[in-house]
Amino acid sequence: MSQYDYLEVTLWLEKKGMEIYGNHFKILETDYAIIHKLIAYFLKDDSTCFQLNIDLNKGILLSGPVGIGKTSLMNLMKNLAPMDHKFFVKPCRDISYEFIQEGYEIIQKYSKGKLYPDPKNICFDDLGTENNIKYYGNECNVMAEILLSRYDLFIAKKIMTHITTNLSASEIETTYGNRVRSRLRSMVNLIAFDKATKDKR
Image 1: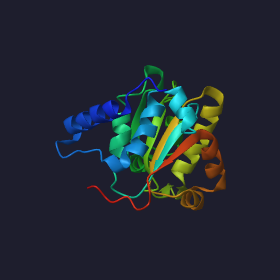
Image 2: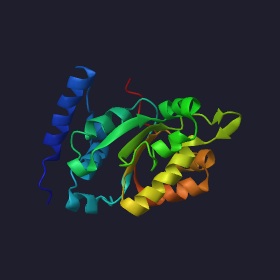
Image 3: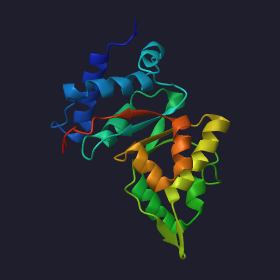
Image 4: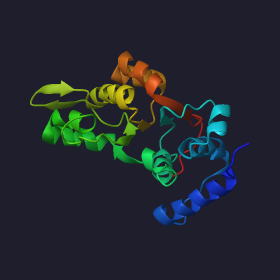
């Protein structure tokens, strides 16, 4: 049996969401199954994660249609993550803009370079909304390179990578290549909203 009251935690998160996003923020009952998986993971509830087939040694890949609140949920989950699993949320589009400005150092920045001597747990938000970017004429799939580097970090130091995306697994492979998709299988638990989930904006 879990030591947590998941409904109580869900209602607390909804209240937190209202403080951040306004009184219109709601967690729908139809989404409770997904929310409870995220709660179990970020509270490190071993028994519930075992039942739900969630590996606490991996990160989270939260996928689903546009406008259903994936980014908001991951921002809320920062309130549940224990100190050694704290993470920050970084939009992939912002990383692509940084790459235009600063070049290949950005790949190091989000993996294991001098800009971040202490690598952090990161949630890459909206994977797939960035474009392949040219830097001095050289085109680079920036997020593919970062994710491959993050895999090395994960293997060496158990640094967690979380991701939100609208892409399916096959679309991830098409966009980033089979090496990235293969490594993501080792790095993250897939938690997916139903494709029929409606835009909540």
